[in-house]
Amino acid sequence: MFIEKMKFRLKVFRYDVEDRFRLLQYRIWNKHLLMWWNNLYMRDDEFHSSYGIDPRAMEVMSKKERGKYLKRLFRRRSIAHKRDLND
Image (cartoon, rainbow, N blue to C red; front, side, top):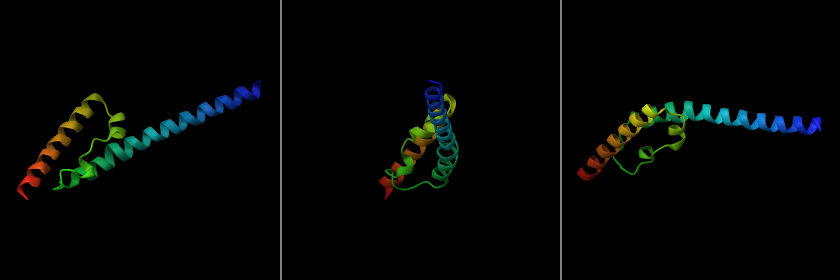
């Protein structure tokens, strides 16, 4: 009985650690580095992958950050659309 409880607790602990690591990865990579990289250069192609919504990054953002992120993303998309029409 004791061994089964310990095995169960270890599984729960392992999944909890994996989940926290995944959220930390989303916070560092998707929310900061990847968004910085995508904002670095405005692409001419409006269908570039950098103009897609990143749900992993939005998962770790606050409501205010999500609004700011979507506002910037839509602005960048419209600029890319205008550039695409001019070419």
